[in-house]
Length: 501
Image (tube, rainbow, N blue to C red):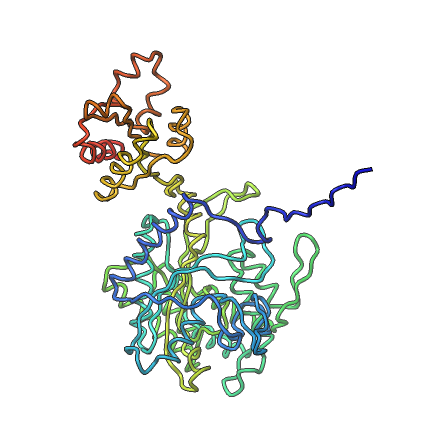
């Protein structure tokens, strides 16, 4: 009896949970969008910086939202020397390490932008992945809020350059100092002991941050003893007194029709709190700076409900919110929401140096922004492929390679078909699958006459439904015979026609 072959255990062809693959069109569309944003950053005088994907756990710190341990929420492992390493969870913590390490060699202020993937060891969900791209810009080394105003203006310009129309977004600005002032007036912040009331204060801040989702009633419930949602789940509240909750209510009600009126309301709410008044003054300076540059209320507003989750923010904070409606996965109509955020973090570098180094910056969620463009019908859905040189005669591969070299030398993306050339129809199917704009055909007869056929594949697709005969196909303008020496000129002209040029 013949022995059975042992069963081969093959790995499943699947990415890890919470990760995904990106193919040509997605990669190219993302690169194009990031190029437009990077051009804005560059125009503002920011320089690119690229840091390793891996940092020490100590360098990353414990600023990841909603976690208490440095290596909780990140992908971390122990190195051979027993030190702990982790994949970066954002692009800001590595910047703090870089500035602390090279501060004597870098200009002050140091203005940098960075683009790259980050990793979060969090539970994945629909549209929520463990690896995603961020696009950051930061100014390190200056305390002036003019730097914060500049970041907000640059964020506005970057969104418009990426394809978000004016009036489809708003940059919302607040100040952590104002929040601290309100907390002080409400009796949940003791300036002499910042750790006092810390747990209670955290519940209040999280409640404020949920105003757009829970409404004022839901937030007020969280300020009290507890909130019971529709399913019966109970969320513990901050257990504030009625008078304390009323102060928070007045703060949430401080946003007015104009930035000037909002500032006036905030002054009333923070009362005599020194830190609160300092925060209001900084918001006033930001508003005046942006307004002087014609960044009006259609592009930004002061909004007391902007909190930001990261624990390292110390001053102005801002979010870019898209204001148009979409239909979510449950069929409900809602606004798209935030695609970028940031703020001032004057204590982050201090972890390394022991000295406070003022800094401010913003991070754009690349995948969120691409999803927003898709929702507005502005996302690139297909990548333009190369011109395809078909192969009619294997023995003349050198001639075909000469054609492709000419096209590439002229800045035209091109390739020679390297599959089985026996079936010419398969070559054209390949060109279609590659989304090629033009196919070049040169058989023996064309070679003898010194001509080539060029085929406008984009126009051919548009006309195909109306063509009924081979003669009609030959007579229409989607295919033409040209002199071999005119290849570059005529291909460029055909591609321009497809682009509406």
